[in-house]
Image 1 (tube, rainbow, N blue to C red):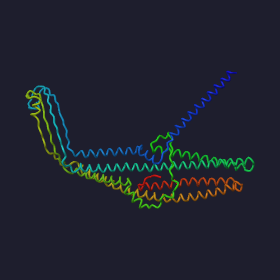
Image 2 (image 1 turned 90 degrees about the vertical axis):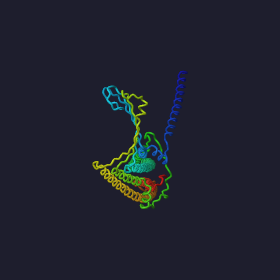
Image 3 (image 1 turned 90 degrees about the horizontal axis):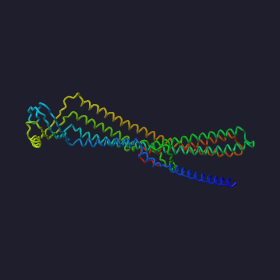
Image 4 (image 1 turned 60 degrees about the vertical axis):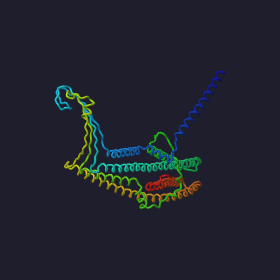
Length: 456
């Protein structure tokens, strides 16, 4: 008996120990999980995309390469300075490089030269190249800014998509709870014989539909989080939350913009237009560079040199020969292009064609911007009308549902009419949520083209 009591005591002890250990492990897991659930604001999301996005890094690397090209084109104006040396071993009958006489012995000779050259005139090609590289650097900077702007708009889009999906999920869960209560209500009345099997089946069908809507809403929420995580270059396996900003007040949204005023502002600030204009200037400068091939090239050259040989006729010591054979030279070089297969003319023509293509691309960028701005203004006004209509529809559906719910409670209408009213209310609520976020998004698109900060 004592043995049994001891065993019971031990089992109780180990059971308590296991429970405490389990609670500790559960607490640690919960703490880690809570810590991992980082809450990201829209500002933080913008910072992350600007910090981590690979497209931005690629654009910045292109910018750095162009900056190096600009530095090199400036250094190309300076004279060149190069040194060279040759050490030769001749065997048998050969010419002594010092005396220019034949000798029949092994001869070791050494010569060294130091030369410098500077271009005095080359059709202004180097100066034009510097100007072109400056323009190209500005173009690359605009390209980087364009990538950043596009990504910030994408962040706002995905961020709002997450918020929209979460609100839809909340609404779907609310409708699910109502459907469960309705089924419970129908079941109780059915059990006492006040409802038919058709009424009970209708309630079960309504519950199944609500559960499916919750599943779809949850899937859409998960997909929205996945898209946002990928855009932020975050690990999709690590969960995070988004902070819901205060965006309930839609009355402050300005919808009185005109396409003309938005385009006028965007034309002077939008990086797409600036980028297209700079690329046109780069192409125009390429024509000047190509025309430089028509002109002569004038260079100034200078050099220093000496030599040494151990041939039989070269009896002087190494130092003496180096001093005695020391020479200096200076001169001019002139290269006049006469006929080179019309390569200069071809280069100019190709540069002009590229310039014309750049002009067309610039005009296309302007036309595209004008088109999308007109569409954005139209979408904003349409979103405002849709939002007001959705508000009215939701209020009407809610009032109608309240009346039908009261009549249903006293048995004045059947379950089919009640379920239809509930479905209508659910749809009106979802339409209102989507219309609200669509209006907010359309207003942010206008802010994007106006160059305003994309914040809530």
